[in-house]
Image (cartoon, rainbow, N blue to C red; front, side):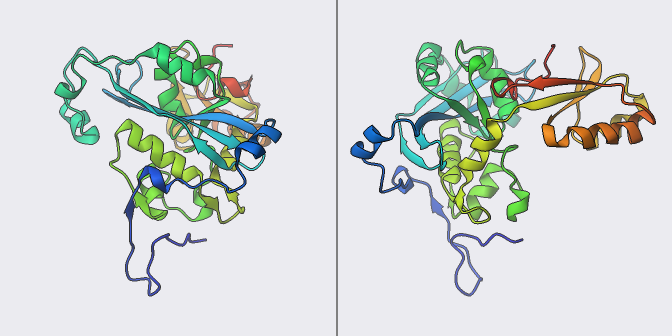
Length: 299
């Protein structure tokens, strides 16, 4: 299946892209104060969140910028009903930024100098949310959880992992590429720009399902998943495990992967055939929705 580019000309020779503006957000006509008062059971609050960091490894990097925006959504249809006031702040990491980080983000040492994220204000926003959404929650969540008193108890959704973009005809899961396919662009790799780009993207209708992309994410985020640990996996299987999406936990000295219940049987059979060459010797741990994307559990 090939997704039809939004903004493509009739002759297919050109693509028109528009820079995303706040006025581009569109909301259902039915969402009025009267409707909201009668359907409070359907209205929920979400927060789109993004962090820019001084590096890619959680144990070595620090947050240098945080952006977030609350929004209201219909929990049954996944429609975005309204957007709230954003919060954005730099954070001085107390050390010089690398040239690579400066190039990727456009953030300089002068921009972050003396700035601090007000976590009490951030927590007040997160506390009102039923779900926090990031485009790569496995990256963003550990950074936020280490500093927030609220985010650790929340359900997190990941628009990178919990929406099947490839089945919809997209060649990449990257936010900037998905944005371009949907006819808009932003100044990427700045926290609030990425936040608004993601919220706008999620509000688009999924042509394969007839509902907003956000509904698919909501459905997946509510599910219990399972952490499958390939205990005592032979060293020579490391490349095979890595290619199948397993991650290495150095303190625990084991490979692990988070999967859905429907995939559990098939995955254990794969381990038996290709890794253990015999009976499954791993471990399976149930992960409730509030624990998604925290990293490997120690249970």
